[in-house]
Length: 284
Image (cartoon, rainbow, N blue to C red):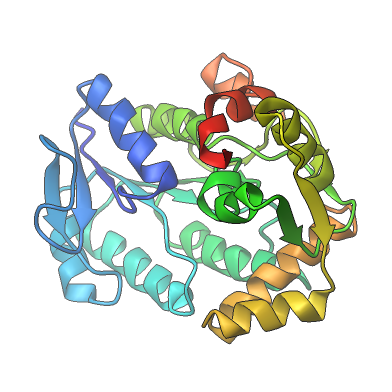
């Protein structure tokens, strides 16, 4: 039986790593892109726009297994509804959705609620599915906090709350196992974490030890965090989602380690200390 895979979000943190791994396996896959030439060299492209249902039906045509990853923007719920409808119309046989830790449509936390609502769309689609629910990414320390860390501090409203942050390469390892063997994972929801709960202070301490220069964690007031994101132009919905995540972490509700990375891939999740060692140049 064929297994033609389509990867959305192929240029992002998780998607780019999935593309590398599928290429290494010589899998039958393509990447959905908004513009021609956006995919990596040698990777088949299909044009599609989450806000253009007709383009999605064309992109999903003939696809067996679909990896769905939506950008964290106000249009995310509408994008998800369009994608699920197009997948049904195109005859997609399995959806692998990158969701978020704690996703629950009944949650009082805005970020968990919106992810849970999208997960419910996938569950109720009638298409076999697998949900991946990762915690926050180690890569955020480079991609979002890199400049601040280089200046000597990480600013966030998370107090001493801890979370088992995960390396996106581990998420990609799990995703590829599921994408290439979808039937074995049908109907499953996998909580994906790193190997240890860490506070922001502990993470910057690891960076301090590696780069030989002091980096502080500054627990900023929530109002100040909202004001900063507003001045940066972040949409109100996204601010609400991110602040709800910060609140969940601050209260200690995000702590906990899952065994699923090792269960599915056969290797333990990568440690923060190793990630910091590999990326030390980003903070110097």
